Length: 134
Image (tube, rainbow, N blue to C red; front, side, top):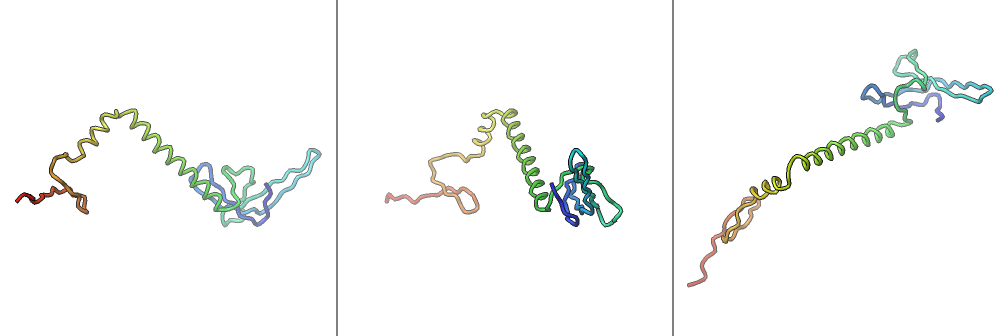
C-alpha cells in the first residue's frame, strides 16, 4: 500500500484496546538489484522524535478513522452474537423442553367458564354478565 507524507493513519493496536493516530513523516525508497522496497516512518503523538517504521507497528493500519470504526464494530457485533449463541446452546443442553414448558404453563391464568377481559395494564378481570332471563 502506498501512503503520502503528511497522511494520518489509524492503527488498532494489538496489545491495547485503542485506536492510535499516526502520521507518515517520511517515505524511504530503497532500490536494489532485486527491486524496489518502500517503507514509511510514522510519528506517534505530538513529540516529533517519537517515530517508528511502519513495518514495525504492532497493529492493523487503516487509512481512515471510519474504516477502523467499522472493523471494531464488526468485531464487537460478532463477539456479542457468539455470546448469545453460546447461551442459547447451553440453555438447550442444560434445561429440558418439559421444564421450559412447565414454566410457561404455570404462568398462564386458569381457564374457567367465567368470561374475562384483559385491561390496558395487563390485569385479567372476570366479567359478570347480567342474566337475560326475566
